[in-house]
Structure formats: structure tokens, C-alpha cells
Length: 148
Image (tube, rainbow, N blue to C red):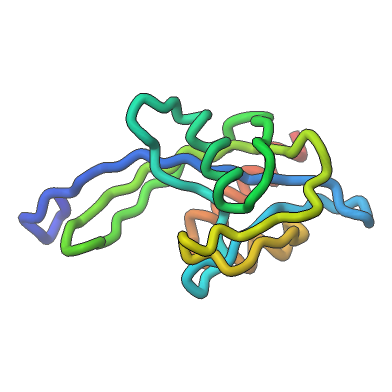
């Protein structure tokens, strides 16, 4: 339950990816999606019987219209709460560093999910551009992993 409410929080599991590549100038670029007027990372809810890592791979592929990415490592976990259809939901999202096995030229946003754009953005710019603080934290954690 939340501190100021008798409302019960329904907790859901989700997974997503920090998909990255080396850009033409040698800088790390990450794949961002534009959903509901906010720059975001591709992610989605865990389906019944699915593992967290396979959920992350599936959701990235679906949301950006790509082949299946490969997981490099776990980047971190975030938690946030929000209301949907009158219910208070708590979402735990597991994040993975990922790459495509081949260069993806024709990425297509999953418009049924409200995604209108998919693009590669330099990591430093992506950290500033994402619309949620927990995504900034995940991108900063990814940046630290890259330096290690």
C-alpha cells in the first residue's frame, strides 16, 4: 500500500533494453523511442510463463520493429508507481544492455503502443533527453558499465 492511501498497489514486472552501438564518430549511441510525447527506452510487461530476459528481448524487438537483440549484461532495475484505469500500479522494470547482431537500417515504431519515433542518439544527449528520472539513472548506470 502507499503511504497516504488505503489503495492497494498491483505490482507488475516489466523488462527493457538499453540498446547501443558505436556511431560513425566513435561515440556510443543508444536507441530511444518517442511515446506519448516523451523520449523513452523500449520496454514492456512480462507475459505469463516468460522469463525476464526473454521479455526484454521481445519487447525491444516489438517496439522498434527490429530483429531480436542480444543481451550483453544486466544494467539495473527501476520501480515506479502510476494510475491506469483507476488502479494504482507499481512497475518493477529490469534493464539490460543490448546490441543488434547486424546493423538495423529500417527500424519501425510500434504505433499501436503510441510510439511515433525510434532513433539513435548519442549517450550524453540521451541522458538529458529521456523524460523520466529513473531512465536517466539507468543510462548513467549503463555509462558507468561502459567505462568499467
